Amino acid sequence: MATRYFLLGFVAFIAAPTPAAATNTRFHHFFPIYNDYFINIRNDQCATLYASQQAATSLYSTTCIDLLSCILANTSEAVKGNMASASVALGLMPTILTFLGSSTAEVALLSRRRPLLAVMIALGSPAVNPLPTFVYPNPVADLKEREGRLLLNHLSALSNFRAAILILTEYLIVIAAIVNVTTASYYTGLWTITNISCSTTWYPIVWVFVTICLHLMGMLSLALRAETIRGAGTTRSIKARVTEWIQHEFKPCITHEKLALNWKQENIAFIFVSWLTSIATVVHLLYGTIAFSSLVFIGWIDSTQIIARFMASAIICRAVLMFELAGMRNALFT
Image 1 (spheres, rainbow, N blue to C red):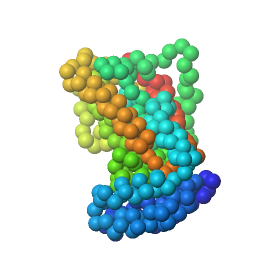
Image 2 (image 1 turned 180 degrees about the horizontal axis):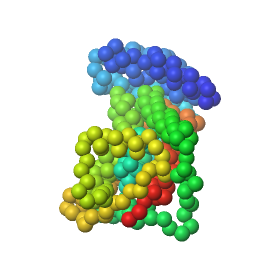
Image 3 (image 1 turned 180 degrees about the vertical axis):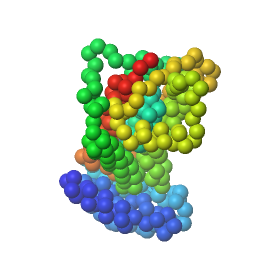
Image 4 (image 1 turned 45 degrees about the vertical axis):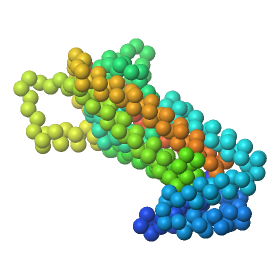
């Protein structure tokens, strides 16, 4: 089943028309389990409406709604029940992923040393663990060594070759996570119909990529409250900044030089941005719940595969993030 699902996705991706070449891509394909079932209804009882929908010059023609209603009217109650179960599962997915994902504060902390990896982790794990409003964790306290925590000191002496292999592995698995959630969300929108906007395909993929905005807000929040302590009279040219970034970005955090952070006094800008980030995270979660629970023409087996793919990406990105934060913890002094 997984092989069939992958091959169908690959063929559809290669054959998918560009926006300039087609105006309608709705009802062309469905998820594998019920693909033949719905295509038979589309080409039989609803053939006239399908032809009209394909000939429509506007993506937002009411024919799309009529065709949706026709296919549903000719769908058995057993299949409708199966789709209802899938909608419930998909609607719960964004909330489930928040327990597996990372907070904006954690990703922002990693961005202090490895901003590229932090952005990639944000893209690969679309759900954000929400922080309470007006509450922001102190990264300096969080990174202090505490009794009982696992120490990674033995990794600080990694050879350049082993460090390079480790970095390459991190980037490859995070890139795989990004590709995974991108293709999963793309085909979820393409092979289903959302009953709140029949002609729209982009609800799921927008939910995935809007996550980066939340994490950028989290990075701004941290920048407004925490500053790196440097030696007196230290000046940093653009060249020095770029060199430092390259040195940090392409080395594990456990091998970095010591970092000192100063947790500054709160200010109005920090309070507002951190509060706005918390609110935006909840709105993002609500949007995802609505977007995925409104999908039809997908069965529970296919929905389970989609959920599993999102969960896998979230777990992978979380593991990489926590490994690097553990490395920063071992390399921090205050």
